[in-house]
Length: 249
Length: 220
Image (cartoon, rainbow over all chains, first blue to last red; front, top):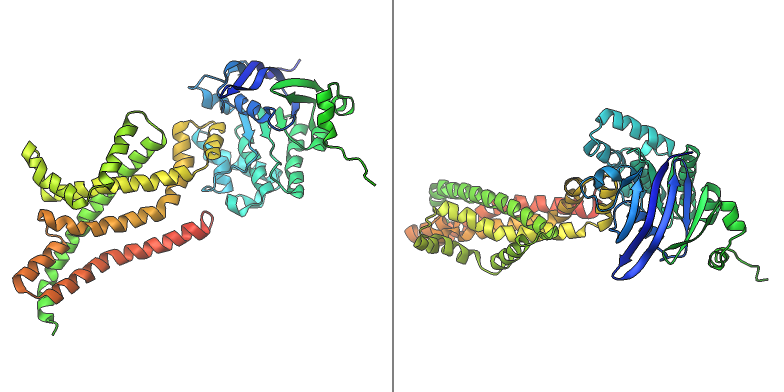
């Protein structure tokens, strides 16, 4: 049996009295790819932010490899290195080159050797098809290229789990593809990932397990096949209906 | 007629005064940059108590003329036993005035950095300090450069009131020479030329840097 990388118990998150996440439980095993689906405002992004310690939680626990991440300010940085996160908006540091962006944290935070980090950075850039962009600056890149750099920047810290928060939501269709291909190849390599997306075909292709969230709760979960072909709850059926079109002529 | 012999004779006096002006100006500006940066960080990080003091300081500094601040230090403070040399008063006054302007420049730069930048830094394992030093501050400083250079020019011009506390700066020298020789035109023309020689290069550098920051940005 694989180790549990992420363990969430009775997670409650409130914003100004509004309950965003309501007593949520979830496990992610090593090597597993879990896709979170749900209508907008259901708490998907908030969930990822809680896992990364960017949001304070009101009660419950979030553990990475058995270590509590919330409320532990001192080693928050240490634990966050175990959680790689890629955001929806391209969040590269504009004042640093691509290589500078990728190398900043391994060198300054993890205190690894510059040469070794650079070598790995170039290797990873090659894998995502951006070997020639190492010295470019973020503003010279397309959205899809920026997102791929952001993925490399998260990968190089060797996180135990990668969180993707609607990473393709702000991209043009062709760029969506190039970014999703990178994530698919990570899945093939057996990386543990938790993905929030609105790309249903991609979800189907990449997910070991689909988790459907609404109103801050897990409404339904199962394999991609189960979920897309035989959704159990009315809520999930309604949600999936949004993505299908009937002929009008 | 312009009296060139007079100009030649007083030129060394102007040179000495210009050196003093630039020297005190640079010292005051460097101090004001440090004060400004510290104040801006206190405001940005919303540090309790200190934040109140900084806000009061900024209001006092921005809403009183430098001349009044200098008089207070030079003529007021000795009454309570603090006697400062004119040089110290000049530098301290400039730093007191400039600190608040620099603080505002840095603060608007800090505010312009989007929150997602800080969050990305955190999610890459950086702590507050590292996020500030490596991610937020470099972006904030480059955004504040135009305002920052405008402040430097403003502060250099403000040094002209130093003459009021008997510092032998350019203004003092000109007024002194006018009183002695009554060569008003020559003395004032030299004053203008010397100020231009100090400030024009700064302005030109400022214009170039500003254009780069605005139209090119990083990676140009």
